[in-house]
Length: 425
Ligand code: ADP
Image (cartoon, rainbow, N blue to C red; front, top):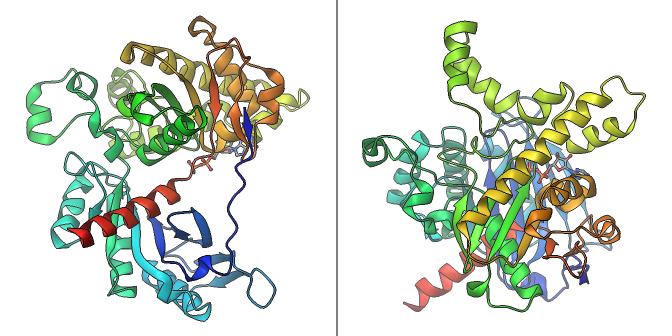
């Protein structure tokens, strides 16, 4: 089954319907979109980047026709070049476009909700304090998310702010999946356990696949592979996450663009004791210099590696090939291991920049999984890229779906549903 699922274009009437401003705030960037929650229509989207440096700029793409043209604006930002300046610039554009009154709430992607949050949550002072405390578990992400929340409260003081946690979908994992083989006190006293990430994406693609196969999500069993710069695999039983490859942090699991994924923890002692690495050097090594980048010595970008691999005259062609081979093999191994978490399997799902677009990576992974009765259809695999969704296996095979993820839409939807339920109660 093929389904092009074209992105929704806004009509004049939709611009007057209430919309959610979705914010994904990183340490030096803010991604944002204004989304109409029922239809998923994106009215406006953009990115502020290089924040906290004089190169700070903001790019805003407006999808509504204004004066007969859809505008893309690029502004440099002024000192102190911070998240607040970026959001103030966004607010001025929203005011100019007459969109500010449409916004009914701000939905924030928050990376770590620990064991506190399995549901979308209205942000108040207590919630902010908990997100702050959870920065122990996500030092790179939660402080940035909190900066975004504070800046939005300043920019939109009258709007409700909602947190949607990346870890929330995985809170259904059983103990046997989330506990490590470490002394129990480390879990009880310090919260050391598997939490999992990319939850919003795994949930969205499972839900979309359930619709495509015409089955209630609660009766579906999938293994989903979110393959982008960060990569994770999740086992979904009766529509719920029962195991996932990322752990207490997003470093565990399959190999990624610049992250190692699973390695023998003994390597860390070896690097400290025999090679003289400091803890900071190890953090940088495992998070930023490993994965596809580290193995290829060339790039973390899958497109660059595929092009280099195919150009046999390129001096690093063999390195690019090796890095991609290891990447695909390790992902296939984790997918196969998750058959132990399920009693039935409706199919495999690919999503994320690589999962949605790289026919080469999908072929390598699916070909490793013939024991699970996956047989790739080359023609469907090549045809299902760049936003197209569908099954890429032969009719006699267990299905393997490609689904374009849309985390922003889920954040908008869940924020809106929370507001409706709180106003009704
Ligand atoms: P992030 O995790 O930062 O959101 P994305 O989901 O956008 O990342 O995925 C980025 C990855 O997707 C990069 O490795 C990029 O090379 C890869 N990618 C995007 N388009 C293609 C393509 N046409 N072919 C192969 N890989 C692609």
